[in-house]
Length: 215
Image 1: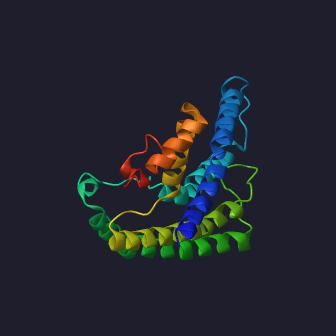
Image 2: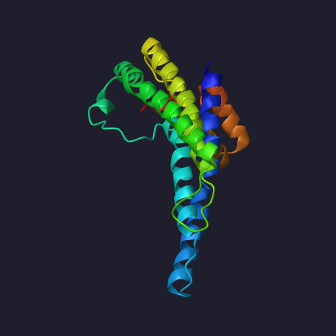
């Protein structure tokens, strides 16, 4: 089960990090538009459309990745002081009451939104060139599926935490531990490091609570 959870984390991470390159494209488009408009007095007729499509794509496709990293905004001035089991109960109830109904509504309405756009071969109304925008709208139900998948993984983590009293590892926790191992290996003689691991049973410098960083 843990391997499946980390696999879902990895999928969300790959998607999020791949589409993160949109920020470079967006920066290039904005810089080009500003220079063309204010230096050469020749504004483009496609700059605005490309800008909002790139920004919208970046914003949407990062949703599941952010959830996988537990990075969404939370009013946690009380939550952070709760024991893990109580945190898990809070998360589980909120996922059931708010997250999943919202995601299902998002997916259903997003699919109809895309289908109407596709049937009309909808084009942007913001510029004379009017690029086709139904592929952009197709991302809405796709994002819904990714968020639903990651949300299911989070619910499984909540249930496991309620049963076991500790949060299961996330991919980010595993990556952090790998960095600790690499750092320790780089700082120590390999033979000495191997002897310490064999003697103590853990990586030198690793704290007892590092197997999960919590929330």
